[in-house]
Image (cartoon, rainbow, N blue to C red; front, side, top):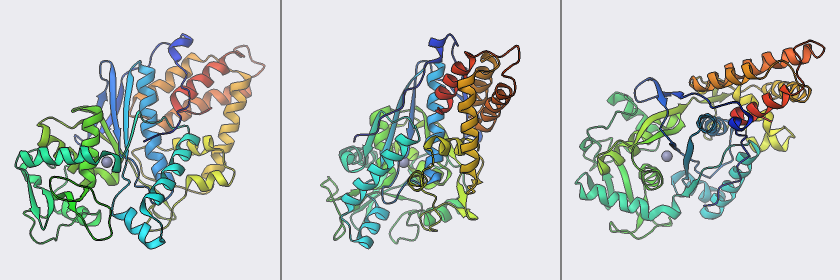
Length: 412
Ligand code: ZN
């Protein structure tokens, strides 16, 4: 599927600024920081949207986090291979289409287009592979066949299930105990209470055709793939086994990332991803931003209200990805003020640029510490705007700091 147009990213090494250092990120599966520094090419998979509603700030925060990781990797001198999926056939989409009287594929196409526009406006780097569930049915079918051939599947009334305990690594992504798994599985689209399953945690690989729902041919009969096998198969096809980072929101840790990793491991006997990195939830009005609660702050709404998308980006960057936070309506006003000062200083110049570039790189390399990165730029901007007459004022430094902020934070 067509993605969107990526912004240009300045190559700081071409400005004589050398390369960034190795990047550390927090791996959910080990509960510790890990160095994500492959020798030449970094491979990243981030779970994409289910296109039944517009992009809210929680989504934007997730895609921004992995945009920063890519920028840090590029600055390190690495090539980046990035895949994102679109779950363009799934229960929530079909339910919304039925409820609103819109054809499901039309609803999906409309929301995917809005997502592209939001991502481009926020200056988020586009994936190299942007792949929908519908266009990758054959990949999912092939993975279910591999699992069947390994003897780790069974059927319940025509639906194909993955027997999670056939995989020795099941549970290693989340580390959750069984009670937590059961509760989250019920809450997040699983079916722990279905009669006939061997274990309540076993998950759907292939769902047999239901009346009025889209379906495709397969060796298991007509139907459609489960969500977890969709991501597992797309990642294996485009990135291979043992890729560097699997990313998404913390609400994907279980069951989604656990199940996709386990299915891939059961099929290949190789590790799915080396690290699992998760963006904390963004709240609004006292609750986690979610479609079901209806407390969404939409990127498209802020844009329609005349907010500069770069200021939206800057407002999100003020929070570290691992700390949950609550959006306040004043955040965007503060971000506009900060952005105006930064732009003024980039145009005017200020103290030497090299320490700012080093500080930015150091902040991002330490688990994408964006609050620290913003503090580094703020300090330089304060000096630049206060000391235009001072001896250390260099008119050319603004261009260099501006290029570094563009390359590493995507802010221009
Ligand atoms: Zn996924």
